[in-house]
Image (cartoon, one colour):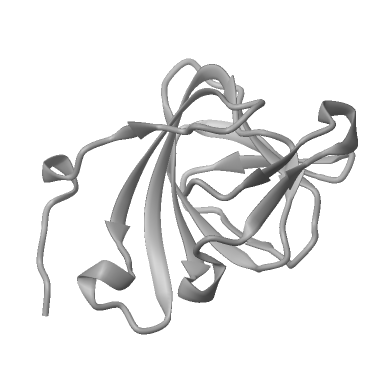
Length: 132
């Protein structure tokens, strides 16, 4: 068993083209002994957003605090604390903070996604390795 407090885990900037005002904490990963999933906590500053991108693996999101939107292709869905999101493999998506405070959410991805590529949408013209 591993028990830790989120405040003791260093927050890192999201190092992807198209990310604005995004930070991430790697809460649990394969290096912590997780056999199947990695858990990350994202924090998006007011007016910030993740890159608009897609990848070949699913992820699940639980919104902890704040308000925002998640784009599913070109369809915008509102988000607030308590909302859950399933991003299916290859869904083009982006998380945006539309509120006055931070938008915080948990994101779970399969460990098998580690090192897989993330493709920023065509208008960005980039195919980037996954950083988080």
